[in-house]
Length: 308
Ligand code: PAF
Image (tube, rainbow, N blue to C red; front, side, top):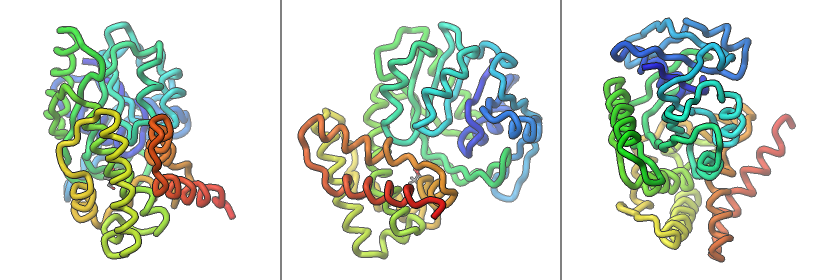
């Protein structure tokens, strides 16, 4: 099967390097940056615990060189989704299955409404990955991956989804197909709402939020606001989202959240797709979410002071 992974960040590089070892797949990595693509072409490396693997995977900035793929994983930041899809038009036929993996919910509407990839499922993963250098990823601990269609799917699409889940599982991403992917996306969103912005504000790893009383209180209040909005939208919440978020802080205690990694590199963060998207949904429903509003403002203030 021809598989294309769009985006050479931590997750994209982990996916490409992991999938390349499975069956006889032809795996490509698409990078929008031609210099970096040339630098890492056929020189990807994957560290899993103490083992190092070198992978001869083609990396290109030219989607024409890849051509039509059967399966495409979109692993770019939420704010880059539309542009990345536009660039990747040559990868898609009517049947190509697209599976985007983004934090937050900011990408969903943009992807559902697009005219390039008509056959789209969504994915959510807690697989850990750290980009050590361009093309060099470290597997950061196994997590669960869920994939599913938001809209109804026909038998052919369901078969494609099962095949994708098989491939992902065989590559080390333990994956299940689910009928309610939106509930799972929201479950992860609520965790990110509680952790990511606060790690930027306190400039600390996830576990520290439990030790700073003010941060812990804000985390709980932000997640409760998110839960209220989710319930108003009819999202089914299986586990208490505050307990889940506190437990993710413990299990990922030494992790630098993805948002803090961006902030430290002075890159735009995903605040609009996470707390910002919640604030927008809450406004549509006339629900007050002052804690999330403040988190958005504080992270944006920090972004405005980059370079100074
Ligand atoms: O965005 C992240 O960093 C991760 O989703 C999480 C769960 C907060 C762990 O760092």
